[in-house]
Image (cartoon, rainbow, N blue to C red; front, side):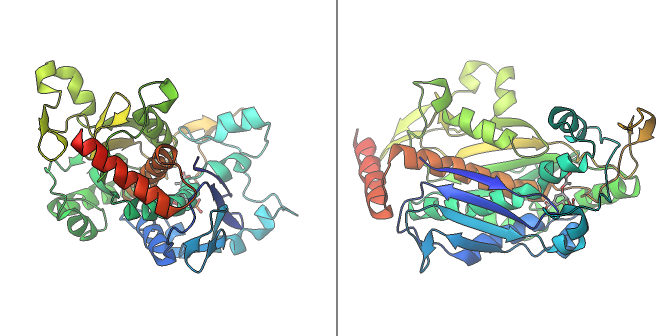
Length: 381
Ligand code: EPS
């Protein structure tokens, strides 16, 4: 079983994660993890924090000479900004400055304070912050390396920002090139200026903006996940994990909600056989009956606008219950491009976890051989 836990506050010393269940002898390239962290930091419309940080992972355990040992892999990303917050965030002492008493509508602030009995809502927002996605991205970057050894690749893009939507039919051969050509990670680079203008408008008006991201996994064998029990369904697992990403409000696979409007014959993907089973179309997004079906896994997620508004909404001061403007915490205007990288990482973890469950092995050699044998068997069936 592959699992991980992470910890860390946005202005604390560091973000950390422990991954357990990675097979031994998996090659780990730290530069690749850092490249993904850099992608997550990018994007037009990001806030001041990204100018302070250069997110870099430090591997603390479980890897020796660039190969996993089979023991837990501990990862750390130090928060450079901690030096500006030490007197507020140190585990030993806090001067209580920068306390937050007016909750931001849409954030965890208020309910978190009620639930955990906090006076200062900073105790909530520090952990609820999307800063946590940096370490989840590092975990996903490790999982991508496992998947890559098995011929599975995961990639992501921004489909829309506000109402600027990219309706392109993508070609996976030039996918990475197109997306890396622009800071908004859009496939159709011709839309970038329009999207940037919208982000500029949001900034001028003290607003924030959401959007839709798409993650695709290629080379996924049929049969990850299962129909036999509700919690084994791969779409349920991926969907749940993606919904745990800060600001995500909806997930769909393939044509998703659109399927509800069509006749069945215009939804279901006809089955063909030529050197293995294939589908004529991929409206299902590579998942049927809670299992991958061998087609690309295609998933979209909708991100709401970030709750911190520089022109704040009305809220309540929890000290005296007076009406007040919501707190303004440094934030991004638009973090949809970052969110695409985070969702890519989250999908990578879920697929790696499903692979480790189906082909369970303590080491990469055996794991790769089982995947290979299985692929050959189902191609001939
Ligand atoms: C983020 C770091 C945070 C926020 C942002 C995401 O840093 P800071 O609070 O120091 O500015 O910029 O988180 C939010 C917008 C939020 O509402 O939680 C990051 O590393 O991505």
